Every structure is written in structure tokens, then in C-alpha cells.
Amino acid sequence: MRLELGNIFIKDVQFGDSTKVEGGVLYINKDEMLKEIGGDEHIKSIDIDITRPGDEVRITPVKDVIEPRVKVEGSGAIFPGTVNKVTTVGSGRTHALKNVAVVTAGRIVGFQEGIIDMSGPGAEYTPFSELNNVVVVADVVDGLKQHAHEEAVRMVGFKAAAYLGEAGREVTPDEVKVYETEPLLDSVKKYPDLPKVGYVYMLQTQGLLHDTYVYGVDAKKIVPTIIYPTEVMDGAIVSGNCVSACDKNPTYVHMNNPIIEDLYEKHGKELNFVGVIITNENVYLADKMRSSDWSAKLAGFLGLDGAIVSQEGFGNPDTDLIMNCVKVENEGIKTVIVTDEYAGRDGASQSLADADPKADAVVTNGNANEVIVLPPMKKIIGSTDYVDTIAGGFAGSLREDGSIEVEIQAITASTNEVGFVKLSSKGF
Image 1 (tube, rainbow, N blue to C red):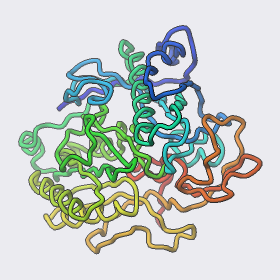
Image 2: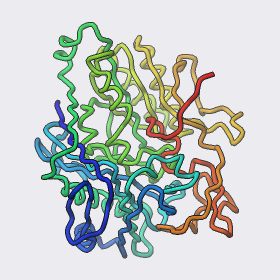
Image 3: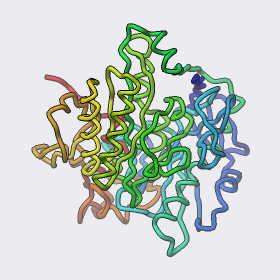
Image 4: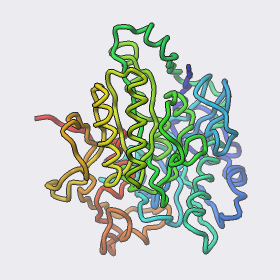
């Protein structure tokens, strides 16, 4: 499967008379966009705001972050199974508006929602502070159940990203990158001397607002399967979860997964990137055993020499992570796991809830329990009323002057477990 990704670099976002890209600026007709993304009977009100890198702005509670994209050639459309029909994507040509994101916010759904500061020390912990963010604040009707609340806001976000993506349909991209994964036998024949490497992509599916969707299907209903990496770039996998903000994979991260990007960068040079195995994170032991068995079976079926395993979330999913690692290793495949840590505020506690001697190659993206003080901001998009009760907060987190003392667990993508982070490791 071959995908051309045309990147259109956006320098600024402004409201205007029509929605278009002109001179590197994304102009948005606010009234038209509100009409396009509205209409859900569960939504009481929607507003749209714009914030840019360096603004003294705090966005919270953040639910999802989504990159505007549009398919211009090939089958299907962006976000298949959600706002568009279920058709296999990942081939042809897609245009992406870079340096722009749709951020959904509004009344809190669950306690595991996040903060994005566009300036100050908090901005140093989230990659999303570097984007021109189109913030959609959606509030739902009173009395709506949490799952319906989450779904309503999720769909508004996808509609907004698809609407803005259309502005790039007829634009000549600033660059075009080509990503191609050949059928397995062709790939092995083409690169006979390169190690075959695959990616075991763990998706958060624990339920209770911890959900991820594949072609519109709740991934807790699937068994592990093989997917082309390019399908992910077209929005085949989207977020629908409220797992802790620091290490959740917003839809933007799925579409720009750095593990997939890095493996493609080395494909045909240092390794043969043969594909992605998607698997779920389960609650019951029998389901964990079944899914990890299938992940390892598929890794063996692909004849992998090496595998990368990433997780989403912490605690209970640590068991899925270690099970996947151990069973893939037992197939004779060298395995690296990618995670983050909950090692206590002093860093002295056990980092993961599970461990095994075979998990001896680990990439960590930071300790989510590290504490930070976020200074007051001139503008709040959303509300800070709930800050004391979010994951990473505590009684007294929100101070009288508007500053916030929290663990970085509360900052969106601060310790993201596929490496979509601003933190880095330093060897001594």
C-alpha cells in the first residue's frame, strides 16, 4: 500500500469571510464552520476560538487533539467509520494541514482530561503548545450520561477536522512524502538482507471512557490483527478515551505516530518495516492472555526479527505490555517496549506495575508524577473549576491567583508513550 502525504505548512490561523488556505494562512468562516459541525441534539452550545504558540492562554479540559486532513486521491475518506463511510484507506494521496490542530474542550466528561498551556513552563511539556490551535468548546445538554457526552464531543471534533481539512484539497503542498509498505513476500524479496521489523501497537480499550476506535469499531471488540501503517495516517484509528492526559494518544498522535514515522525513515535502509499489529488492552485476565497470544502469533507469522511494543495508559495496561513483550520474545524476536513511568514524585517508586527479565530493552518517556507549578494565564479557554479533581491534581491544586500546582500527568502528551513528547533522555 502506497500513500502520498502532501504537507501544507500553515503559518497562522485567522477568522475570515471564507474557509481557505492562502499564503500559508488558514482562514476560517466561523459561522459556516459552526453550522457544519453542529446539529447534534446532545450539544447545547458550541464556540470556536483560536490560539497560537506563545499566547498567554490555557486550554482545559482538553478531550482530543486532531490534525485536519483530506483525501484527494484513492479510496475512502478521512476518518472512515466515524464521519465517513467504512472504506479501506491508506493509499492514494492525502493532504495535511501542518502546524494546525483542532482541540476539543468544554465541560468535563471524566477526571482524566488535560491541560495545554500555550506559553510558560507548562508549554515546555506539551508538543501541542507549538501548534496553531482551533479550539472547539462544546457543552452538552444537562443530564446527559458520560458516554453520550464523550461521543457527542468526539464527533464534533472529527467533523471540525474534516471541515478544515477540505480547505487543503486544491492547495499545492509544500512537500510530498511517500510511504509504502509492500505485500510481505514482495517486501522480503526486495530487502532480503535487512532485518524484518514490526510494530505491536497497543490501543487503550479498558472501557469506562477508556476507548479507541478502529474504522469506527470499539477496539475492545477486536482480536489482534495486521494493519498497513498508512491506514493509521488516514484516521483509521481514532481516540475516544479519557485516560490520563499525559500518556493518552489523542487522534493527532495516531495520525502522526512517531514510531511509524521513524520505522518508515529507516525502511529499506537499516530495516524492513513489514507492518503493524494492532492489539487491545483488556481488563480481564483471560482477555489479556488471548490478545497477547494473538499478538505473538502474528509476530511469528510475519517472521519478524525485531518488534517495538508501545502501550497507552498505565497500571492495568502494564500487564498487557509485559505479556506482549514476553510472548513476542518467546517467538525468538528481539523486542523493545515503549512506555512512561509512575515512579512517585521523588522518582523512587517502581516505575511499572508489572515487570519481567525479558523486558530488558525499554524506552521511557518520563515520570508522570513530577510536580510543576503552572502560572496564571491571561485567558482560559474552557474552565479550570475542576482542576483539583483531575488525574494529577489534588485539593488545593488551583490557587487563588489562578496558578495551578499539579503533576505533569495533567498536561496533555507530557509523557506520551509512543514518544510524541518534548521530554528527552540523557545518558551519563
